[in-house]
Amino acid sequence: MQTVKIGRVARKKTFNWTNFQRDAAPYIFVSPFFVLFLIFGLFPLLFSLFLSFNRWDSASGLSTMRFIGPRNYVDTWTDPLFWKALKNTFYIALLSGVPQHLIAIPAAYVLNTLVKRFKHFFTAALFVPFITSVVAISLITTVLFSERQGVINQAIRSLHNLPLISGLFPADNIRWLFDQNYVPVLIALVVVWKYTGYNIVLYLAGLQTIPQELYEAAQVDGATRSQQFRFITLPLLRPIAFYAVTLSLIGNLNLFTEPFILVGTQYGQNQAGMTMGAYLYKMAFELGFADQAAAMSWMFFVVVVALTLINNRLFRARD
Image (cartoon, rainbow, N blue to C red; front, side, top):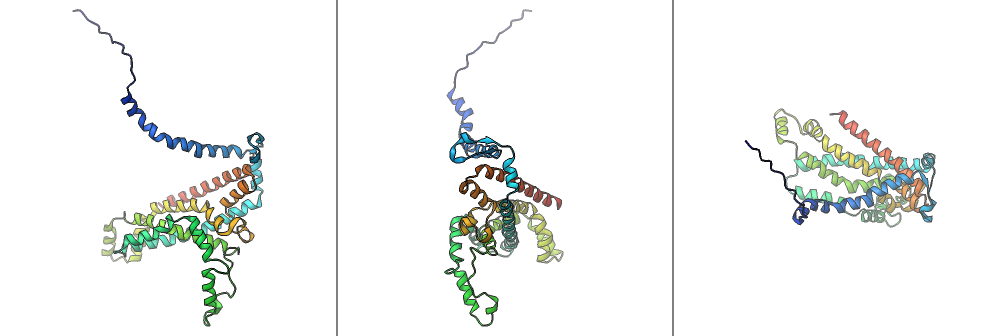
């Protein structure tokens, strides 16, 4: 028997526009995101890390940059204003974070179980502050809480003039935008008003995923509404609560616009409204110490990551 070998004929690969479009089109369409991310996201991040180990006069150009090692981190560690800003940040974050969820969870439960008509209307109305400009909210707040012409102080003066309850309200105007006792409370109030509705929507979405059969079985067993809320609603809301608390934690630790608009660059009496974001802005753009501000931002980044991991551990510990 004779065997015939058939060799492969080499063919020259020609350019096919249709195949190129099919193979390259997805990468072309997603490339703008990666280009913008590299320019405005990754590069500033890496440059700030590099800058934190250098001494640099930003007004004199890159030629003045010189390596100094961890000196910026040491200066930040010994800076009393850094620790004051960190303390203010934690205090305001606590004042604004806890009430959001203490209000949002019961409100979402009431909307989900008791409100049958106009549920979507109330949900949308509660969500409106979240989509409202922070600058607009802060400016309106400054008008409402103005020391002399503010509506809040005028209402307090009117209540002070009432005979039976006059002792409960001060006779003098409250300096909401200056007094160190009221500035953190006012900033926290603005944050709570803006973000509570967003958390209500999150918890409402989580409540709607809980099977109604569980509540029906609990009712058959004689469980009250408070018992259903404690033993059914809260445990099953844990995943969405972890998500909501994590967002609130990170967001409240990075406050800048609210204190900057409300109390200005002086940040109230004894700088009670100066958060870490505000102090970073002051160091980098007002004082011109961009190098130390970069080191400060990375130190604060470590703090935020640590608190986020602790929050993660606390929620996992209860599973």
